[in-house]
Image 1 (cartoon, helix red, strand yellow):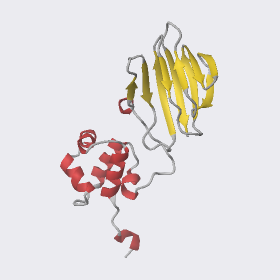
Image 2 (spheres, helix red, strand yellow):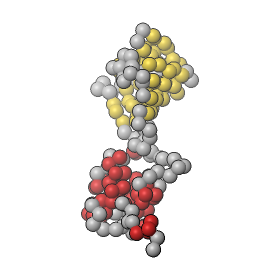
Image 3 (cartoon, helix red, strand yellow):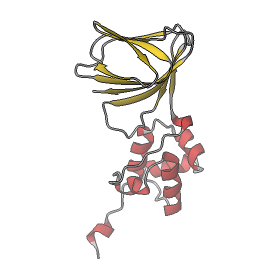
Image 4 (tube, helix red, strand yellow):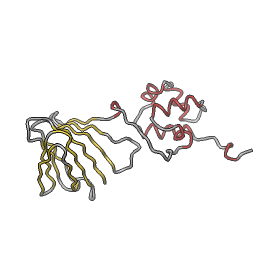
Length: 187
């Protein structure tokens, strides 16, 4: 008998790990996959062995390759979709700056990407991030003023700026039209 065939894959452990990585409750995954919450719980606890179709439905709901649930590893050809509904949003207290988080849960640690909408007259002030953090901003639409430490620069549509995220920094829309930016933080 093949020694590899004797070992049952840890599907339940892998499922739980992926569900937590994707910040989903059992109920949310049940709704997304069409597999009952009770069945998902039994799979995670190792009480049942799911069928291939069940594993396939769960993998699709998590947007991972089926091999991740069976083997617990990503395929070499990384390909991960984060739908519009899965992208979390953070709105400033005054409702004038919207951060849409574009970072998928399986992306490398230390990498954060955002689509930012800055309404007229709004300013987003950020405390220094970790030492060595770099921020990259690209202006899709409008104009903003970026302050970083002692530096201050107006960026217009199509402009790109890289700066030290470890210093105090801010983004201000000094115009009468909304601005849209892409920001990447890398630490």
